Amino acid sequence: MSNNIHILLAEDEPALGQIVKESLETRDFRVTLCPDGALAKDAYEQELPDILVLDVMMPKKDGFTLAREIRQQDRDTPILFLTAKSQTADVVEGFTLGGNDYLKKPFSMEELIVRVENLLDRKKSDAKLEQIQIGGFRFDLKKQLLQYQEEEAVSLTHREAHLLFHLQNNRNQVLDRSMILKKLWNDDDFFSARSMDVFITKLRKKLKKDPDLQIVNVRGYGYKLIC
Image (tube, rainbow, N blue to C red; front, side, top):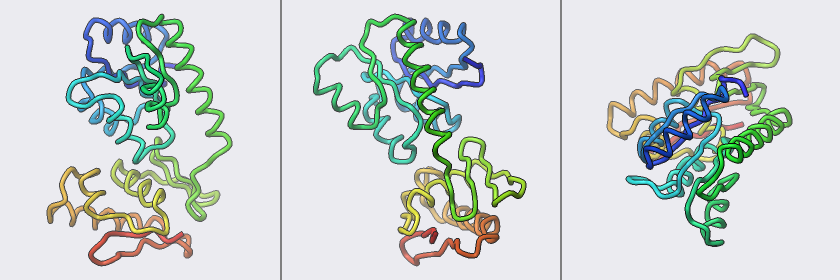
């Protein structure tokens, strides 16, 4: 695998986490190791990894809770759970929350790598079949690019890209203003709200080439992408 593949590994056992990290790096993966679920959530939002390998039992935020939060905004990034739990109910819960695979401890590195590669291959195959289409635009969240028809793609900032992603996921529905402020700005105070208004204005300008696309302000509630 190419070292462009970025794995976010959340594991609270220091020795195991370091062993897994180093083993993956010898296979040319790039690995971010987090010792708890809260730090893993922050790392996910900042780095947008290609795949998540999450221990289920972690301090501050367990793997199931973390997966639930991530799936509210990201349906595509593969999630593989690591767990000492073996009951069927736990396995079912993991898949119900959006997990793609499940590996029980203790496990071999060879099995972990095979499972990671299978999930990445599946994601690559899915990407060939699906494109995020917003009206006449093609949108790439990971690369933060927006391309209108055959014109040259334009770059988006991190917040522009994620704001557009949430608008797209809720297209033709109202996107709750307070929710998105807390998710992207970590606060819904006056200054954060004014900042978001600026980003909405920037997105409107970038989408104006397609007259069938509109971002409208729903007073008192939020914004709606009409598509």
